[in-house]
Amino acid sequence: MRSILDRIPRFQYNVSKGFLHWDYADGLDTGTIYHDIESSNFKKIQDLIKQFQPTSFEDLGEVF
Image 1: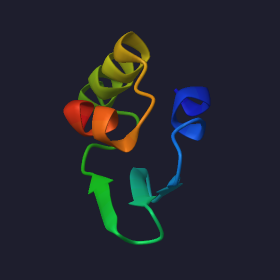
Image 2 (image 1 turned 45 degrees about the vertical axis):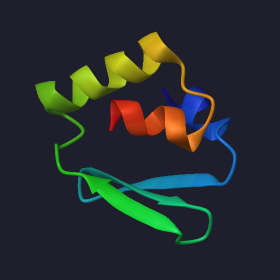
Image 3 (image 1 turned 135 degrees about the vertical axis):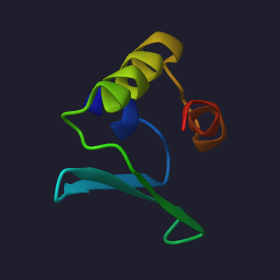
Image 4 (image 1 turned 90 degrees about the vertical axis):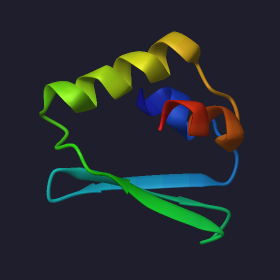
């Protein structure tokens, strides 16, 4: 998943306290996935990202 997210222009993310936090376009849009990265719900999000291979922030919005 990391290689997919790293290719999305102007998209940054980090993991803190078990949650993925993201930032798009230097704060134009920000958010947190409120499923612990060890949870089955987060795994489902990972699987969707791997399946759909988003290439833009807009594409990623369909998954988040």
